[in-house]
Image (cartoon, rainbow, N blue to C red; front, side, top):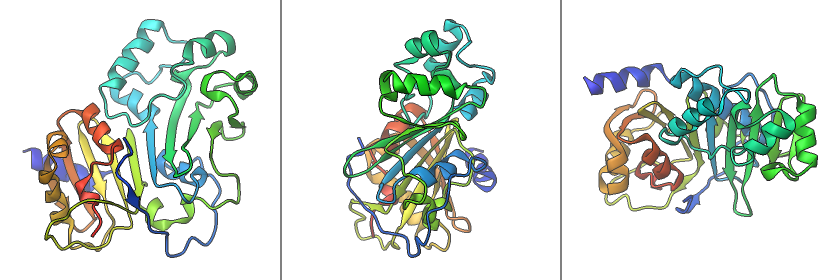
Length: 292
């Protein structure tokens, strides 16, 4: 029954300590501009520097909907906000809630807060990390700019894009090389998900005697208790990569009942504990992404 459920979802979907071996795209010919109509994980790639190795995205609008809290915002009661964050902490949330610690100050002094974030993303680089926050359409960006100028919490020295309701640190500027120019990456992040992780290149690890194809990029989309891994099409090592997870106890405990769909390049897992699964992903303990 479970296998059938995961297969149906595969058909319908959508410590960063392990060192990756990134491989550049074969044709990063241009630097596409930000397009807010795209799913968050794909849209934010236009703001991620080309040399980044990992991208984590949490779609808070999707998360709120899964909790039945669609109307939650900074005007909600303290009890409602506490309920949301308690549930979010037990979910497969891949980012920390960038404005969360500064929420009381932002709500009282500027009229917006962490509950007004539509989605947020963090990315990893060898010389430092960065982040992007997309605020809800109703948030007055003049107040956001005031909070940035006042240096409130993580907003100190941030960049405001009022037109697109974005706030960021370390993101690319228009025209600079970015992930959106790499079709190996954008093609893996087109499906909506509560959280998404995208890695460029492969991860160091021991594939044993298994014969694997090279891996240029991978993505993991998380929704409720199901995870969908995307490795790209035209692969004959999908089942092999799926079974590599049995060798790593931390992964095997968090991700169970794997099924593979070679026609689409996807692997589906059930998450036994979504919060633990998120930790495994962020630590990049991902056997399916090992280098050949």
